Amino acid sequence: MDARILIVDDEEIALGNLQHVMEREGYRVAAVGSGARALALLEEQTFDLVLTDLRMEKVDGMDVLRKSRERQPQAEVIVITGHATAESAVQAMKEGAFYYIAKPFRLGEVRKVVTEALEKVRLKRENAELRQEVEGYRGSDRIITQDPAMQRLLDVAQQIAPTDCNVLITGESGTGKELFARYVHRHSGRRDGPYTAVNCGAFNEQLLANELFGHEKGAFTGAMALKRGLVEASSGGTLFLDEVTEMAPSMQVKMLRVLQEREVLRLGGTRPVKCDIRVVAATNRDVAQSVKSGMFREDLYFRLNVVNLNIPPLRERKGDVPLLARHFLIKFSAQMKKTVVRISDEALAALTDYAFPGNVRELVNLVERGTALAQGDSIELAHLPDHLQDRAVLSVRKVDGQLPTLEEQGKEYIRRVLEEVGGNQTAAAKILGINRASLWRKLKAEQAEKVGPDA
Image (tube, rainbow, N blue to C red; front, side, top):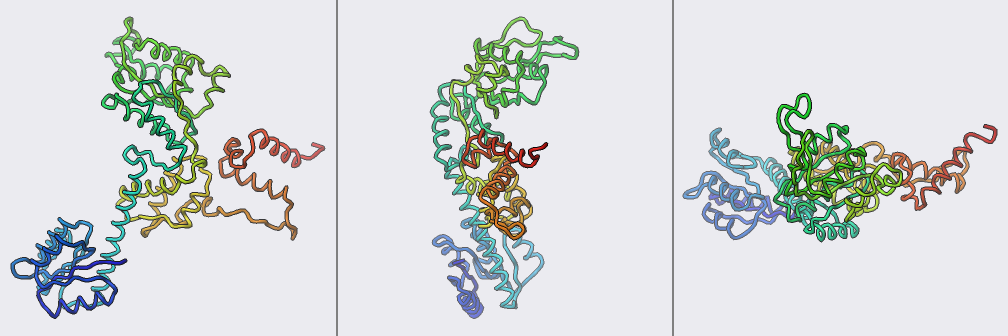
């Protein structure tokens, strides 16, 4: 680290000795013989570390410490004194000193403490730089991406947000559908209104009806008071219906009426209540197929799907993996009060090469685990799960001294890809560059070979 150090001491010999030692270590040094001169330099120049004597006339080391913490909080301060007392040591640490050294000191001790202090400065600086880097990628909306397809989606979302039209967000589990729903809400004219989210797959039909539409007092046994449902509570804002295709058919009919009439009828009620809502819905299912099979009403589909935002899986935007990983690293490092600021090249290569069947949600889990296990300032390959540590480019392995045929090696690769995506044939087919029907035929043929012609 090309560090810049300010040394403050009114004893000329001590000042010269420290300056000589620090310059021999390769640091750039500014040495001054008074606290007043030190305060002036702290206004004019930037330092990584301040070494200051405690007792000096007019402006003492405590004044230098306070000024340094105020003007240059990223810098660390080491207090050195020939009049060491427990009281002054405690006071210095309370004011934010990195370390307190009593004279006479050993040069080896000073070198060690300086190295540790500068390492802390380096870690803080890298953390700040990472935060700045992440904020540069749509950071204010917390959708972190540099992928062109995702950027286009964000542009579409920003364009349609003020229009108040309903939006259907599709994509695999863990891709960030609710993040996009919040993005649409924050960029709409409803941003100051409520944003309410409900998972339609988390309730049975009766409970979901009660959650969405509310009930009148006495509507059923135990209904001791009137309850406003989430639709009514979202008036003036946005209602996010997650996993909307899990809604029972009778609930779909009721929700269609809400969208058409902009009013809701509480359970047990006789008079509808007007509600001004914008609906953003999401699902990880193939909605067109759900409509075709009769599981989802076509008229409701058309009401919701005014604009469709289809979020690509993480394996299709590999360039976002390092960026997202760094973003989550900053978050978890701060939460855990650790100084983990980087991911090693080996660990990052393993993450980037991984297919992520669980998408961004899985990446969050892996980075949180790595941050928790890291003992230094870096997440290493050893801090990732075994299945990622074992990942490598498939090698051509001999069996009984014989090289495998191209067909045999291809079968091994298909098995490995299926294993990586948790058996998801659609995802595996995309990685392999073939359609799902072709993959199914290959698997069927391999199964038939194992069973044998006489089975």
